[in-house]
Image 1 (cartoon, one colour):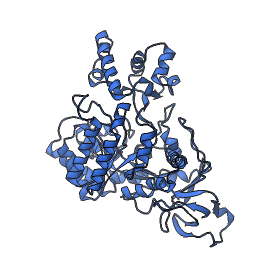
Image 2 (cartoon, helix red, strand yellow):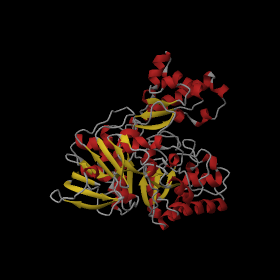
Image 3 (cartoon, helix red, strand yellow):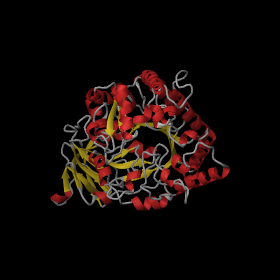
Length: 531
């Protein structure tokens, strides 16, 4: 296959140049000037005149390992390949589909309630890797989750691990690392990661350091105030304390570290952006390998009960209805939302799992108007009608200025942190246009497109030690995106694929042609990449 008359952006932050790319099999075999010719039949040529040709995009933070093992999984991957993603980093936030104690009594808890293996046993990272290899349209790199490994030996229990459990957990993690896991992810905001003492986290980081791999941290807090610290209000901003913790572990163990989805939840947290970046910059200057990933959206995906205090969640339903309970709850939510700079107007219902489909796509305040009730009453009624099983998109996670500051920062790489929910009436829009949005931000703000492409290709490949991908060079795998920058566009706030991406090539095969997925080739082209 010949990509002819291309404007080549090589994924290494070099200036774009004009040239031709010859692909044979799954590799790039020649890159040459426009003056040189190659005789190939017309059907084996793609005219790239006035088109940008880049490496396939690497989504640096996903959870799609939980979907790779499903039967007929194309539904979950099609929006990503249509926006140019050819490789995903999965197993984030402490949860991976595989890598836990064989014969565990707790394997059904893997996924933390947000994801599931559908009752399948994936304790062996090696066996799971073989199962998903060439069973998906993207290449997959996976971390092993600390939460998954800890669930394997102790479920979600807050009790400390015994010496035997600690040995078993470390053994299952090391086995996954030996079998190709890229590193270990931590989810310190979730059960059971939130219960792990610092000594446990440090032991795991030392193990990862021994194998020269990477750790990623979903920190204990992403907002100025949180329930992760007591008292919940006052003192040093909680997201800064959470970053202090991560950096302290990194400094003590010298492990390569990735700070997951740097966000600032609620307007009151936005004043901590500068100090957060300063902390990361100082650590980098000290010689530590530390970076962060970010998405270009102003929202994040969560569950509707996320703002409810633990005392209320643990209360019997009958007691929740008493006046004194409702008054106390109203006061606490009022104080918390004021302290966060976040309210019911920022909560969009995305998935009611079939119970209130007509409300999907509306914000809680819009539903309140529809029902002629207060936003607080509406919120409680939504929870009551669905037993709290509603997924939401939470806005005010950041703003346009913060996105600009983070996307241009030298320590950032790009990602979506998104997944498709089969039952949902409204999907996370990042599934459809996170990467085109990064490119249009570069175009519209007249900043370097080459630098933007580098962050979602070559730099991400280097960060996770992915060999032979992430750049357009002779000998590399032919993972390629061809797009018209002038026509590149997307519909903000819509789960619709972008315009302007004309071809996506993975491992030398065309998998998307003018927004159409090429079946059945696409479903079988993706590789499990061992690190």
